[in-house]
Image (tube, rainbow, N blue to C red):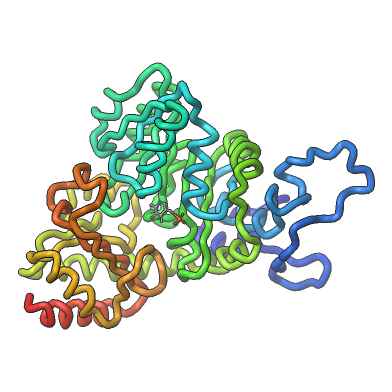
Length: 392
Ligand SMILES: *Cc1c(COP(=O)(O)O)cnc(C)c1O
């Protein structure tokens, strides 16, 4: 399937993966809710598990292909595989590229499912060797490399610390060691950062977040060289079975059209709100890559065009008061997930299983705040009234 790539990002947001429907002339490719596709007259030579031909929706669906075209174009990659969730994409990468005698280096504060897969399940079930390191420290990564290291996995900005790892420098380390580098770029999105251009081998997204952007469909994606993506499709998609629903692929395709417009607004609003919080006497800390006080602000500026919409912060208060603050918010909703159109906040409390890996200021519990598309002045007013109600 040919797919023209335009020089400007937003033009690709609108057009990549779309086309004229041959049967009806509709100017949108249709939603195809079908489990199976008509076989050729002579199916004897068919590769029944082939992932390029349309045979069965677990091995590829029409809407999956359209979304893969769009995301490969937006990331500037050769190919893409779209799966049911972000975790299916991450687990697919680990399943495909790690064996029992392999070693992986992973960021020590990552999405919680990644932490459990690599800290517990892969070592317990397969004997895979894992080093969890602070990937903002290049020396820690270099020191962790072993002869059997197969993969370095980073998450930047990281969830929920917003730690930023230097993609270009880590790619150099990976290349010199003959190791693959995968980057969870969910917070960044292809509009704000492009890890493949900086030397990464695989970019992973939870499409559930910014790329869909509307909080109504889950999905995951991996983008990279065709040879690597084919291996993930062949091994993980077909045989583990985390295929995306065609309907969700269709919804995410629609959401992605406005990605750059939304990311610009999320980033602009988040910076304004982060500055407001940083100046407030009741706030104990704010972690946002756009603030000069962020420990990796310079690296963020080097590799991102803006700083996305997620920050973490704390109150100079105990657990009860943190809960009172969250429950006093009227506009901002207490719920998990990030990257939706509405603002979302989560107070985790001080009992997270990964607490010892967090920066010190996070260890009393923290508020992870995903700034939505509402007017930032309304969001700030909501925070102010909730702080007052909490006597802060
Ligand atoms: C949410 C998230 C994931 C997991 O994605 P799901 O779609 O929920 O499976 C992975 N990485 C990051 C950084 C996330 O924020």
